[in-house]
Structure formats: structure tokens, C-alpha cells
Length: 127
Length: 354
Image (cartoon, rainbow over all chains, first blue to last red; front, side, top):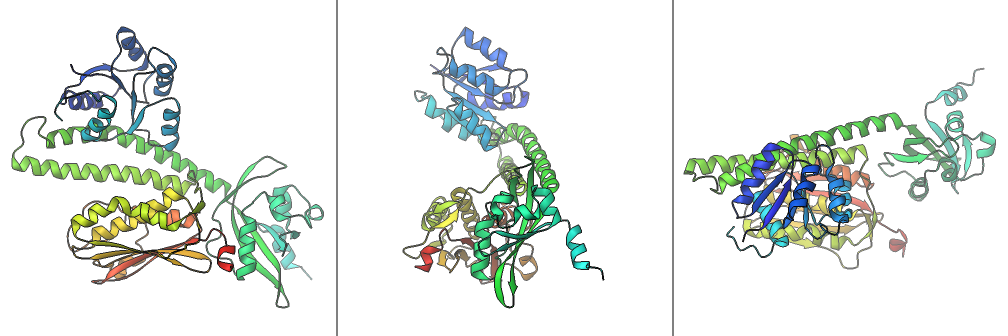
């Protein structure tokens, strides 16, 4: 049974890249292109992990992170922040809001796969 | 008879103080009065650090009185908030000894207002930060795509295809490093990153810097040695940034040294400073590069093609070392090798005075 990942990201090319490398190792991927759509997706069902971009249209990533981690329904879902923001303050802010991991763009598929294995340990697909 | 000296001091655009050996003000010029909101009468006898709010003056003046000359560099930039006006200023500070009939009586403190310049630098820094972010976004899908192609996840590659994607992958790595380094350099240059200096064990710094590079050295067949004296005094340093400098120097040494060569990291204790040096038995640096090597984007072209590096490592290293109040330099001979040395102030002078 494949693990389900919700990718919250608005850049089309990055969506394609990330989805393709997650597909390649057997994860099921759902896409939400902004914070609102992410919250809607979460109403429908809970993924096993959320990949969250910080620069989102309308509601920004930090706010989404905050709502995720302050809601008892969703706070246990691991959130990995994927972002082009490389400043130390951003990392600290995200970790402070409860992010489980912080990965700066760009990154290689292997780096993402290795990181995900920490949070989705029962995955038995070949990598 | 016109008092030209007096006129000059009235109109000079730096704030000037003369302090006695206890660092109390004995004289200040009109601009100092104006900026710090105090008249000469009120200022006399008061500690200069109290009137200016520049705490760094104390260690600077101490060193001046002990050594007779100020060490290079003086603090390039100090920040202070003026009490009476609440305005924030950035000054460049210079101190010089003052003596009368051969006896040292105090110091001249010269403050140059660089507030506007600093604010421009900060703006430039913010601008670079935005640009760096803009580069990272498209690089993301490029790196992901190239790696997947290289790994054959999107269809099999022929031999030429593998070669081409290896090359692209390398250049993507270079681009990423460049973006990372530019951001770091701009932060340091604009002062938005402060050096958090604390008492640090220098031997620990060396251990931490060498650790990730040991495997690389082994693979390349290069001996990576250390010469660290026992019982080292503590050094005033920002741990992470200093480890970065050492890692950068050793990384460079690895790049420019052939198999069978040796790289030695040494610590030497001086009177006022600790000296770190990285010596390699590599190809050496041609004389024409030696002056520029700490500038941005300079990379020495070796006899063989050298991978990696964006030409910013030494520029950043220099910024970090300078911000600590230290110096960095290189001695080198083509065909023999190079030694990069940098100095840091010791944490407590009492430790060496016994």
C-alpha cells in the first residue's frame, strides 16, 4: 500500500519534477496549488506526509503551517517544508511553527527520498 | 593670526574625541558635540563608551595602550544608537595613540559616519537575497529533471547521453553553489549577518572542519594531517563560520593537490593571536594571482581541469576572518605548494600573560 503525499506548491515545473520523482518510488501524490486548496484536500482525507512550499499565492506557507500544526486533527501529519527561501530566519521560523524538516531548493531526488524515508518508514518500495 | 588648526577641526566631517588612559573624554570636537548631543563641558571626564554607546571602544583602546599602535583593522563598522536622539548610526572607528613629550597620555578616537553607506549596502544585500531566491526556483525543476534523466528513470540513455547529463549535472551543482555563496557573501558584506564570537577551543574547530573531508582525502590518496599543540588558549570566534573557513581552505587544498600529496592543518599560538594554517603540497599559486586570490570570482587555472568551486570561497573566508578582527594571507611557490594562514584574536589576554 503506497504512502500518500500532499504536495502544496504553485510552480508548475516544480510540481512536475517533484511528482515524477515521487511516482518513481511508488508514492501516491496529490497536488494543492495554494493554501486554500490544501486545507480543502485535508478536509477530504489525511495524507501520510505534507510537502509544503512557503511562497504560495493568497495564504502564505507559514500561515498554512501554523494552521496545520495548531489543529489537533492535522498536527501529527509530518510536514516537510520545501522552499527557495534559504535564510536562517526562515528556517528557524518554520521549525518554530512546528515543521518536521526543512529542505531548501534546489535539491536532488535522492535527498528528498532519503528525507522521506525518515517520516514514512514503512515504505518498502525499491529506490 | 588665523588659527587654521582650530578652523580645520571645527569643520572636519568626522566626530573626534581625545581620551585619557582611563578612556575618559578630555576633549571633543564640534561635530562630536552635535552628533552625541553633548557639549564639551558636559563631556569632559565622562567615559567615551558612555557618551558614544560604542562598547567596542574599550577593548580597542586597551589594545592600543598595551601595544602602542592600533592593530589592523580597527572595527570596520560599529552600530550605536544615540541616546538623546534615538537615531541609529553606523560608524567606522579609528584610534591612534596620543602622547606629550614622549609619554602616552591617551588616544584620539575618530568616528566616520557611514550610516548612509551602510544602508545602501543593506539594500544591495536585500536585493541579492531576492535574486538568489529567484534563481533557486527554476533551478529546482532543472536539478530534479537532470538527476532523473541521469538515473535512467525517464528512459534509458546511451553512452553519450550519460556523458551529456553528467556534464549538465555538474554545472547545475556549480550554479547551486554559486547561488548559495553569493547569498552568503552578500549577507556578510552588508553586515546583516553578525559574527557571534564566543570562547572556542581551536582544536575542536580543526577537528570539526576536517571530519567531513577525511573520506575525500583518502579517496584521492592525500594525507590529511594536523599539528595542534596541547593546552591551547581559547580563541574568540564564531564556531560555525570559522569551521566554514577551515573547511573551505582544506577543500581548496584537496582540489589543487595530486594523489600522494600532503595537507597539514596547523595551529600556532602567538602573543595576541592564534594562527591557523593549511599547507598543501599542491601545484602552488602563480605570482600574478597571489594578490587577487581573495577577490570574488578569481579561480586559478591549474594544469588539469579542476572541478567545482565558484571562485567565492576565499572572498567569503576573508570577510569572515576580517569580521573577527583577524587577517588572512597566502604564501606559495609554484610546483611546491601553498600555505594559507589566518589569525584570530585570543579570547583572554590574561591566559598568555600568565
